[in-house]
Length: 242
Image (tube, rainbow, N blue to C red; front, side, top):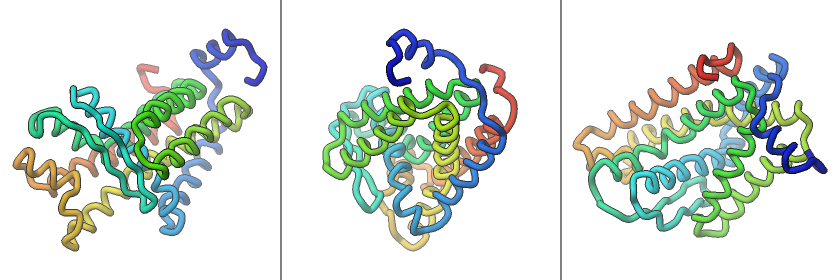
């Protein structure tokens, strides 16, 4: 898109692009699995899931009327979102529940856009979300992580060919769909060993009186449902609302 007028760029963002060949959709799923399953690779790629996780907390806090103080992303792939407001009630519950569900729900939304042919729109929406998140980051590693991720999206969307954009977008969406499942399993494993006592699930248990294991189950059901539905859109027909 380099050298194009603003009108041409805008038309491309709002328009549709042809679906990539089936082998790209399937191949990107395989690459996403390789980014999620091997532990040495996951230690690095999990940072992207953490960005989505903490972004989910932050966006939900704002949407429910809470005041978002800041977000921190750490090199051990953990994160922290600080918001202020009523310590109980629907706003706090939704904010706490948004973290583990955010990567999968973002992946599902991305799959719907790709199935409807809106590859460029997906890339630019991702850039906009990352730019909004950047404003709330409060530590150096977090800034580096978000800037690096946003730069990758921008460079591909601005300079990449349509084939590269499609492959990159499919890889990113598959990664969110698959990467949304593993942290839930890791959470329950830590809880089973007596760790993560202040996890999102345990906070939700204190807020609602519903057992933390039930909340972990909810996280897992959402992640698997998004993977199943989103995956079917990526390799199948356009969803009805596309």
